[in-house]
Image (tube, rainbow, N blue to C red):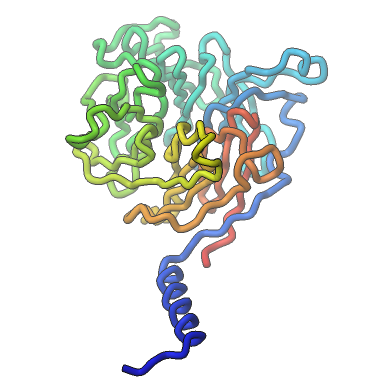
Amino acid sequence: MTKIPFPLFVIALLASSCTAVNAQEIPRFELDPFWPQVPLGDNWLTGGLGGMCIDSRDHVYLLNRQNVVADDLDGARLAPPVIELDSSGSVVRGWGDPELVGGRLHDCHVDSDQNVWIVDAATGHVQKYSPDGSELLLQIGLTGAFDSSDGSRQGRALNSNRSRFFLPAAIDIDKGNADIYIADGELPGGNTRIAVLNTDGEFLRQWSLHRAADEDGLIELPHCIRLSNDGLVYVCDRRADRIQVFDRQGAHLKNLDVGFSPLSSAANRASGTRGTAVVLGFSPDQEQRYLYVINQNSVMVDVLDRETGAKLSSFGGGPGRYPGQFELPHGIGVDSAGNVYIAEQEGRRIQKFTYLGTD
């Protein structure tokens, strides 16, 4: 056996390692410090941003919880619950009746007709608004679903208690048949299910997060839901620090574990409880090769290979209030160019990370 001199052995080992890493291209991002354009609107002040979504025009919608410091309103005006920005970061419009929309805004979706769907965890309802927010078209939850197309806020009841939500967290809509998918269970004690309804809000089916035989005591908390182009349903299993993948009928296919290595000392640690898989977005390519996952434990955005779940990289500066850092990031969106947007609940802002390509 020929012996390799030690320095050459180290070089060979490093080369082998680099080849394995470089076999998977890794997306790169850079903070855009000039997005959005401020001040927002008419000198608007936002509270915590509970969620966000992006439409087919790359317009960004922010869900403003309006929980501001009262004295700050001496120098600003309270921003409306829903704020629409164009791709340049300029305000297009703001709208919403806080009493009607709700106070714990959590997620949104813009459908192919530019209607805006909003999830409010506190009231337990999902609402569908016209593109400019002037009309409430449909509400699901509380007393079941109602259709307000007759101009009545109460409308007509559409179906049973199975369309009532308790602490709903997230929404997505099937591009093929317009079925509505709801992650119902933002906190422990909720319904803890995935509910599927048709486009009129009529109940179709439901299922729970998957639990193995030895996971009976593991709390179910479905915190996000997104449908991929190839017919899969991705759900953030927040308390288990993983993403669960189902088919559209609810059959469990696999888990994608999302890791976390705390920097705090074990002796004094009271951490690791926010969750590593809180919300997610797909890369915009047809194959959706990458998952972008907000990890609230590390307070970073993890980049995962969608097929294997392997962590490829992370970006963001960790916890903090400086540009590029995050204070409780809670919403994520990806536009058609691959740029990633992060909405912060405690940071009360939106930040844009420009896609630079892959290495």
